[in-house]
Amino acid sequence: MTVVVVGDALLDVDVVGTSTRLSPDAPVPVVDVERRSVRAGGAGLVAAMLALDDEDVALVTALSDDAGAEQLRESLGSVRIVAGPLGAGTPTKTRLRIGDHAVARVDESCGPAPAPGVTAEMLDAVRGARAVVVADYGRGLTADERLRAVLAEVAATVPVVWDPHPRGSTPVAGCAVVTPNQGEAAGLHGSPVADVDDAHAAGHALRERWDVAHVAVTLGGRGAVLAGTVRTDEPVHVPAPRVEVLDPCGAGDRLASALAVALARGADPVDAVAEAVGRAARFLADGGVATLPLERLRATAGGAGADDDADLPEPVRLPGSDALDVARRTREAGGTVVATGGCFDLLHAGHARTLADARAMGDCLVVCLNSDDSVTRLKGPERPIMAQQDRVDLLLALECVDAVIVFDEDTPHEVLDRVRPDVWVKGGDYSADTLPEAGLVAGWGGRTVTVPYHPGRSTTRLASALERVG
Image (cartoon, rainbow, N blue to C red; front, side, top):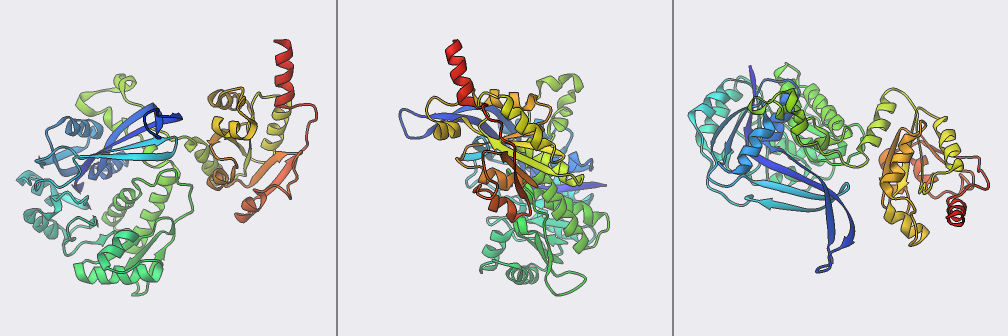
């Protein structure tokens, strides 16, 4: 039987690029676009996640007849879509990023709209579900009384997981679990939610108000708190594994989809929430929506086959996600993560020896590389000599370097907090005790070491020699 996703489908667009200058007509950055990615968002993203999990899934939604709706259908490929008329343009959210920093979000057709249409085919699809995920994004679909009646009907026999929205509809009675996040729970309950006890109080009150079996208040990196469990009336706090988060988008969708599948499989609510929290954490650790293999779904759209793969848009992979993935996989295998950092402008023998020594201390080496702007601020307007991408390529060509992550700040503190190496290595011209980042590294149980300094090797000396030769 099918897992049915009910809710508002959106079109999500990521535009990622670089910026090295301001616009002459306004003090805003000029973004040189490197890649553009289009994917289903909202209930569409939940359906895509389930399809990538090899679940039999149907999306019950409302769609427009514009180009955005066509892009939505193409992005979902093999997912069965049962749609009524939307009566408005496809809601589209375009996020503009410079590297992994969000600059702006442009919303189109996201304001008030006529009530979406609900068809008999949509109602029949819900009745045939083995589990239902309601992904309410406040567009009005879940307010339809006929649809609500059918959702309440199926909630008596199959698990219904309802992911609410501040502008959305009240969950129907009988839902297995409702999953508001911290802010939503606070707004719906009318009181702050700052800790586990607050989350449980809000969850318990909302559970009684909605007449649902359980409420799981999600707390981001702190996991989730389950109210109304079958085991105890006390707060059940399910902590989340600590992960490096590049982009939190989609974490709630991942949790709700995994929760519904676990409940359909027969897991009790506590175990199901624990499994869902773990799945959401792994999803974020792997890079989130930016690294979902959505081309697998697109390849099935319109009968396209493997030969059409070359025409598929490249999925967005945010800068640094490869390095974080290398670190994560090394830890999962029980290995030691080593990191070092610097400008590495004109690689020379001293660099090579330092990098080789660092790699020998563990099972992977991540190089934290100063961006071009960072090098200029540190070294002056004539530096770097080699552009950022060339420096990345040269470092990755070395056998001892497993990954490179670029940072734009003047110090590596922020990027170190993302990588969290077990060993942080610097050249012997530094003292481990006096390095400003040593305390930061020690905070998560890491250690800072120095390796021998190789006199006579420096970028400045090499640049001067090349200038004399030239």
